[in-house]
Image 1: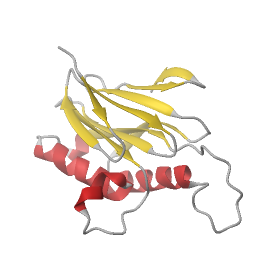
Image 2: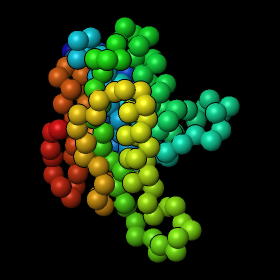
Image 3: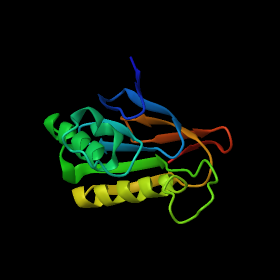
Length: 163
């Protein structure tokens, strides 16, 4: 029986095939999905911000790209996944609101900064990014199938696509 496990904001889940992982309402946040196709085990983390500046606060680990992705990869390895077989797909990182750019605000481009941080973290971990649906100005809901690695992106504005 196939189940769908939900990932909340600043949350992470790992499942095995045939299960699916879902997260809702990605605006400037980014959903990062990593799969080891041989083991058919995958994880999804829903990050809100690029960098964790308080590494002592372990309660917020999945809120940030750098610590959330790193911890998810560590937990995947504990389940027998091998990093060189892992691939990633990402979605989100939109610019949901127009904010007057006075050169001081970092709110207006948080989605872009999240995507940049996600890509850097994946590169540092040597995990290949194979597909993305990021940027623009609309929200997304994503479903990650750990059987085949399909990432279904649903959007009110853009319909449904599989990457």
